[in-house]
Amino acid sequence: MPGRKFTQPNSKYRYGFNGKELDKESSSTTTYDYGFRIYSPALGRFLSVDPLFKSYPELTPYQFASNSPIEAIDLDGLEAESSKKEGFLKSFGKSVLRGIGNTVSYVANNPNHAGYGNGVQPNTGKPPTPEDFKRYDFSIIQQFNPTYQIETFSNNLVYGTYNFVGGIIDGDGARTAQAIPPLLGSVGAVAGLRGLAVTKPMTVTRGMALAERMTARTNFVKAKWASSIEKYGPDHIDFTKPVSEVGNTGNLVNGKSLVQWREPGNPNASPFFSYDGVDPGTLGIPKTYTQKYFVELPGTQTFLESTANKVKAFSAKDPGVNGSYNGGGTQLYSPEAAKTATFIPAGN
Image 1 (cartoon, helix red, strand yellow):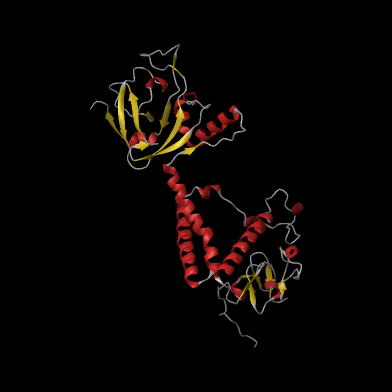
Image 2 (cartoon, helix red, strand yellow):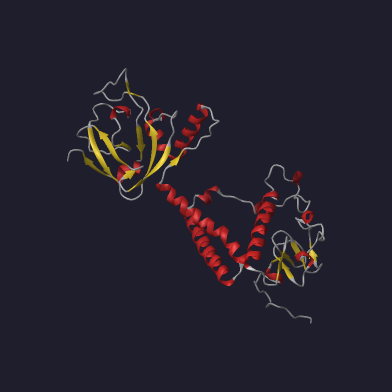
């Protein structure tokens, strides 16, 4: 009847047919955004062909809900979802396969890809719009934003757990499958945080030449431990040997106690440590550094582990051997640990 509406005038409710979002910008008439295609109720079909039409020759290119509009709804412009109740395993499997297909389509339709359809979208044959690029926006700054990461982790954990368990209880395999990616994302975040407290070796490939390995290690230290180079120069680390990040378990690092060597009477903690038992004559320090301190570590600490290099002598009290202090021993660097650790003089 004329004048009858499903919503009140000026309503801001954005969803309608099949629960899809109203799209009033792409057409002068009302359309619905299904994700991969736009549906026009005025025409009774999608405005573009099915991106997967080559895989389903038995369906029309403009198919809606796999040509079964009475028995099913269209999920995202790609595939149908039957209104008939499916078994848990069947719906779980179909949802997993659908997710894989959507991921492949998402990657293939990336307008930032170098071989992207000679400047046109594979699914529409038209040049990409700013909105097409926006779907693939990635902010590296946001990835390092603690607030964003905490919110994302919390949402993924709550949503993933609720729907994973709820799907099992309700016998809804599709719901359980759809909850797996966010749940894995939250578990991965926890694993990443735990990884801060375990060894993180510097990764180099077997095929890399020594010069390439040294460059990779140097770049790693510059990126994550810049202060060690800015304050002490690059020469104190032997980059021909592996470097890595290591964490503590109580007072032990890699199962070993830490010590620090200083000149007697020097009350100032150094950011450099070594394992108990390492010869101080191999740490690139003067022989006058004879005062040994045992180290107690509070909470979780992270260290840069490397091999001390042979360095130019810097103390007037010890000219070194041929003007240098020998290296070769394992050293650990952490300005934060130097601030928070407790140092106990050996022999006390």
